[in-house]
Image: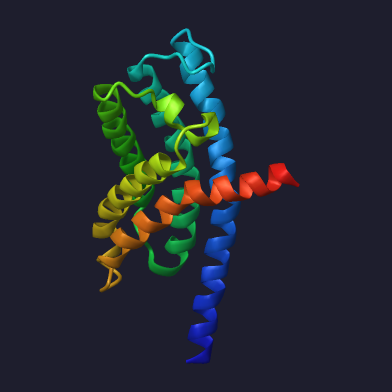
Length: 181
């Protein structure tokens, strides 16, 4: 029993450590992908892109975060439970759909997605809401893959929503601490 408990703790530590390293790395890499998408449409990173371009930029950004993060998750899970590589696609799809819906809503409300982002002085709460929605979709899409091997897989939907929802808050806090230091 102790061996199983220690193995679970070890797995959790590895999962958390890699996520802590890869989410910010994916965000930074995604930022450059977003710049490339913006440039491809003839815009720079000055926040003046029309809503459709902003949506493409953010979809590119979260696609990279989702790919980097879910690839890591899949590699860790696959060793233990042989989960399908569709895990990665489920994460990326959840992010893209959430950003597309957010982009459409913001366009209808005449709110710039760029101005909304906390990095541009916008609302950290708005980012957290979008990421929570993304996490819920990701969990929902990954649930069918997980339920084959875990009888409490429905919890993953809630855990994913909460975990992704706090990512912008944690990045904001640690970013502030880092810049402050």
